[in-house]
Length: 191
Image (cartoon, rainbow, N blue to C red):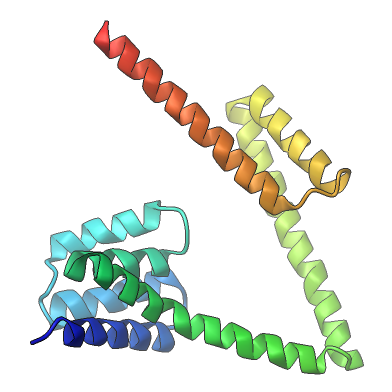
């Protein structure tokens, strides 16, 4: 069998799983396990548990992480890329269709009222989550995290800075802190 056929099969399996599972990453984990562990026997139960744990602990969507890891485990980097593409295409297509439907119907008064109500609900959920996370964060390490929160809030609300830049800046800052901690740990171990 040529390398193209297994890659195509992996792509089609990933596409089918992503297109037919509803409920997020945990449902896809179950579908991946059923296919690759139980049906095909390509991955052992232990490996699948390890891949599932890694997919859940890595940043990003569990479904995408799991698909990428399973593809990599089965066929290396080409498998990871093919499996990733197969997993991302169905939701991307669905979002494009929904966006176009919204674009065409946004001017209808009933749709505008519905979206307005949904925005209020989403804002309430985000505010509740932010307050809950802030309370938990302040309980652990009050000063630095509170300062970062207040600075971020001020930059977004008062300075018009996009939240994307705040997240990227926080990621860069966290990465630098992690590298400095590793350096200190290595220097302490060398002494």
